[in-house]
Length: 388
Figure 1 (cartoon, rainbow, N blue to C red):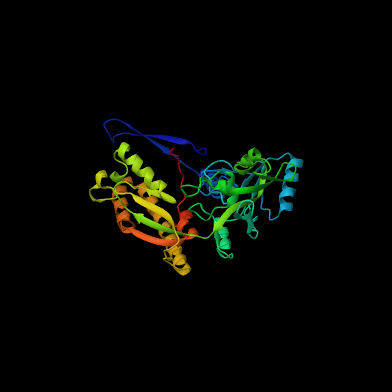
Figure 2 (cartoon, helix red, strand yellow):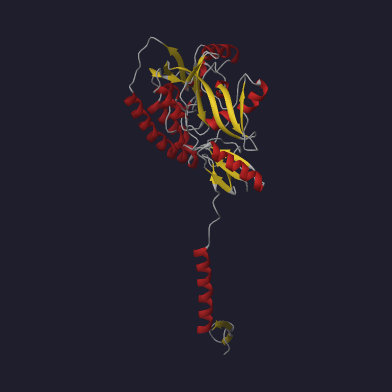
């Protein structure tokens, strides 16, 4: 019988009519061929390469790109060389630091991506008679935390009047993208800039200040990375001060029930503080009734008379503990996303465990502003808006 042939056999008497049985005879050669094909498929699956990962992603992993080259310059000369190389090869340049922006400001396909993290030198602060203020010059890759520590060790100790809550971002991104601080009366962080130096498309260092040209200076300060590579910023700073930080938990309805009544009350409260933050998690009280829900209200006010509430050791321990809390929180958020029905109960449980008790502390400026450590442990996207 030929290889793979089919034999048809009629079997009378085993049913009311003849039953036709089809028997396929598989030879050793057929089994061998089938086995080789199966092994080939298995080998292809085993050796198949996953899709290539992008060369760069931001912190939240909502932006990614594949630049032709990634550079990590450490000096002004290094920046100059990168720009001249890009000019010679016709490549475009974008820059990134810690990658905490949710925007596409650092995205470049096929061009050069410059990571400024190693441009992290801080110059000694100087007092400007013209500005009647202390100033400090920093390279664009300086971390917020590193500048805080550096200024705190100066004699006299110095600080920025406002800053980001997160201290693991770098000033090149914070300032060039116009990020806000956490103070009521200081507007955005770029308002603290007195001078900015940028390496232009010819590799030359251009310096901008309000004294030279206010209009050019405004464009250069918040330049979105479009005018060149930012080399340094000079910031206005001031002597270290203390902030009295209070945490209270009033009813949601105390500030957000009747706009005509609560609006003026909310505005007066915000304007009376140096800094204000309001947080709201739904379902934070028993019974899951919105009328019973509370907000978390943080308020900061300067003080010159009250003593500090904690030592540097206390603050270090607090930040260490917060790091572990946020790691746990990240897993909890993932669980709630996968199990939405658990959200009301878990929100109530977490609010009961970590909130609800009014507290008051007096802290150094950086410790009060950067009150929450471990934010990096919870990757997220964000929607912000301004109320005027």
